[in-house]
Length: 274
Image (cartoon, rainbow, N blue to C red; front, side, top):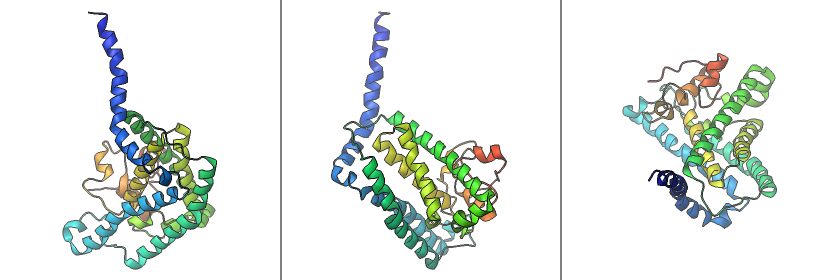
């Protein structure tokens, strides 16, 4: 009897791993069924733009609705400032231009250099969760250093980063309103981390979606009851109030997501979110 217990324990591990993988296998089978599209050189830029606009649209709707509905207005971080259509359109035009003229050539070169391999099996769920978390932490650190440098060196700020600070009160479409250098730099950080970790293509896609979703939320200008910073305990995550304060004050809160780097470097400022 005592000898059979370790045997059952050993058998349970592969079985649990298989169950974890099956959690994502249906999703991966759906993705690989579109293999000609996924392997197309046009897919990365289409995926990038479609995901960005999909995350922006709810906040765009909220901007127009909350002007008329006081119950929604209370969630606006700067309720005295609302984006107009005239402010939104240039952001959309610039995003389309950047995706067509800048992002597509870069992703095409990446496609030539590293064609996408679509394995048959999906990754295990714990592996996906761990690698997405590590990618986010790495991106947060890389962005923090880049951001701090481009604020501390006046030439870098004026030449490359100032355009992103055109709007003191942020809204969703300001997320990618930036210079070519800034867009390329942050895009490189987001792309290289999954490669360094050897992530499964599905993990790369999930990380990209999480990363762009969090970035849009950061710039949304709303502190909603389900905002990410309210879900992560102990003030470890700054979220929209944290980043909105950066655009308002300029000299604090340089990390995009988490708060530990700003606290360690003495650049953290409390957002006083509700």
